[in-house]
Length: 329
Ligand SMILES: [Cu+2]
Image 1 (cartoon, protein in one colour):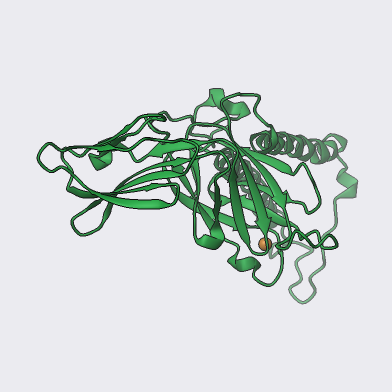
Image 2: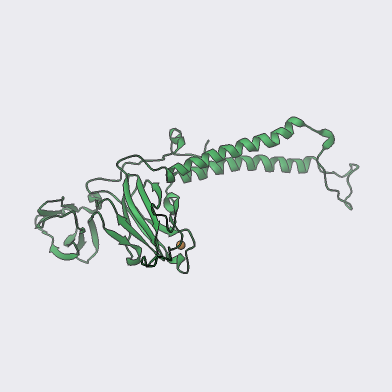
């Protein structure tokens, strides 16, 4: 199920609404005319052995009606075109907003690489997991509050080094003397006695790379304009002859899609704004070779550390004033 408050769902509803109106009128007139103007038994044209194809009633020519045949559909098509065009702003209008979250995406045969040009620190919602991790940049103490949860262990990864720490079950607050460094990758994963993951805190530094080749998900924050700059590169970049192939980065959930063009130094850009946490699909929408169908991945929408995804950013479309239901206009 795609996000119901994206412009594309609204657009779908609007198109369905007008299609229904046109369909009801067109088929209504069609069936009415078939029944009303057919050659009935008893009329002089009624001859079951010889059915004659009808003709446009030239003798009953009606100029105003014929002009309406052209004008009404033209107005309808122009109106639908304006509606559809406005939605492309959502994908291709790069927000001037300084608060946008930028990330570079590289398509290769046949996987995606995600390069962080901005750092991201995020954490699962403590109201849902009953675990809260405090580890600000430069802080010398990592604090894990676990009141109400069944947490027993925390695995801390810092710059590739993983260390396990036991959760203090007496105080439900575990303090670990460990300096935080936001220049390197850091994560805290809290698990219960059975090893089930209860809570994740993660810091992705500038320059960090994730790849679907390693089964990693793209991770981006909610409630921000996500600006993706997309590049297509060959697997072997030392080969100057082969520039790679075209891919298309597609996020079905938000109806957003953009091509990756080999040789295009500045890349291509698309934007979207997720507003709820979850894991959603990434697809390649341009046939790019033998394993194109395997060029899939996942995107995790997360809340930034200390924030939530509660604020519903709703629809960003020309019809903002019409509310979020759509379809009645
Ligand atoms: Cu592909």
